[in-house]
Length: 194
Image (tube, rainbow, N blue to C red):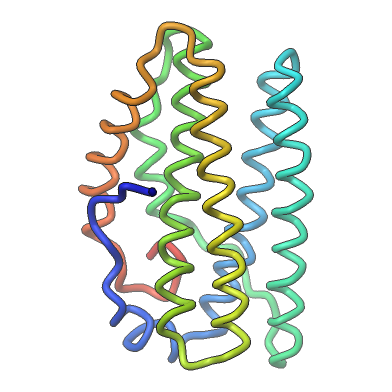
């Protein structure tokens, strides 16, 4: 379904994640907050697209609920939410978004950019849920994997709805190819996308 070209090595969980749970949880919390911020930005930039505004409004609520749930786990484990981390993966993906051109092209690219982040997060959560030696986090990440898959599908659906003359399938293939190049440099750090 996701069509990602380079899967995450499950050893990432054993070699990086399990020895850095606090770091992963802090990074994950901020990923949820950034996803909510992205949805708010889409609302601000496209207030005339009522369906998009409705979808993004619900997404903001869901992402902030996820943020709170991650923060609750952080507190349960005696940790404190650390400082926000720079997400180099997302920043590299952002470079692929069309700057200039028409509003339709920009909107489609922003939606596909969002879909890509959700797709990779879904894939990472799947790897986490299947490989982490922590029953609470395994169940949590399985649940979030399903949620992220829904977000991915929603962003693709919205891109196709508002595409105008943009060939969404062609542009998505270009995003997939670009992401495959970007992700080769990740999977070694204690971050969700790292």
